[in-house]
Amino acid sequence: MTATSVERLTDPLFPEWRGAALEEILYQCRELVEDTEFPTVRRWREAGGKVIGHFQVYFPEEVAHAGGLLPFKVRGAPVEPTHAESRFGSYLCSILKTSLELALSKRVELEMFVTHPICDAARNLAGVWGRNMAYPCRILYLPQNPNSAFAAPYLRDEYDRVRRTLEEISGRPIGGDDLRRSIAVFNENRSLLRSLYALKRDRPWLLAADEAYVLVAIGGLIPREEHNELLGTVLPLLEARGSPKQDKVRVILEGGFCEQPPLDLIRAIARSCYVVDDDLLIGLRWITEDVPADGDPLLQLAESYLERSAHSPVQHDLRKPKDRMMLERLERSGAQAAILMAAKMCEPGLEELVVQTRALDRRGIPYFVSEFEENMTSFDSLEIQLETFVENLLFD
Image (cartoon, rainbow, N blue to C red; front, side, top):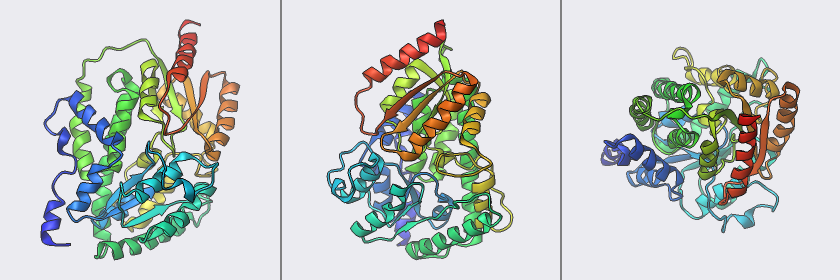
């Protein structure tokens, strides 16, 4: 990479929000998140940068960031899988097909792709992707038994294996000091995201679910330094917002850990309810505390994945039983009900519904169940059903 390229990489990838009022900032964020041409990724590459795509749910982005690479959150898109359809069987979730479609159609160009064995389909994604792309396609094997005493050192070595491949791509070593600097940047990001979700929980009339979603999702499209600057600007503006409190039911939203509901669906839910907590894009918020700066940074990242982390249907941690974790989310957020959603053809998500509904039935907590697909375009029927559910709670 030339010196000129390095200088250009310091230019903002997402300048459209700068200097704007709050509503305009939120509008620009929505536009970027829904743009299936991914202009920020294109700008990064045009400036000489390299991009590492990582599939849901979690990836240690600090390692890529430490090498001067852009970690890009591969989360599918509302596009037709024209090229990718023939690479997969029929009965698979949409996100696998649309994610590969982004690469095949050259909407997104990468230097490396990483997936994880979160389900049978995702485990095979690297092989399918690798047969169609010339760049490295790897599987990051997160611990299947996170309760083992060997889980942290094992995961540390997995991160190191990824680090060595990223060094080849970046063309420079990724040392301990590089990793510590990146961890500091991401710790700031985690703190800002915690503040965002605290506002959403405590004063949800100031921050709708769809607005919170785009503010989080932006982090998978731009460097974290830019994301930190954006969140640092937006949070005080949200705090000062004059939105009145409304008589809405407080709910949690479960089921967005991998394939993402359409933004219009989240917006439709926000019209009826205050979504005070959720698992949307949980991988970008997986580590719930600061990663310690001392010691071996890869080991600290590994231990944080295991010990300072959220929960998900695809992590089988005996200390985090799925029903208890959902109930804790309900209690912690002061929610009155739950909205349970599962992506079509998603085995982990559909299995989760069984556990969740049984737990809620035992507690007598009301819930609303639905399926979704990222390519959905009509929400009228679902919105009517949800409004009926909410009215029954408000006027019962």
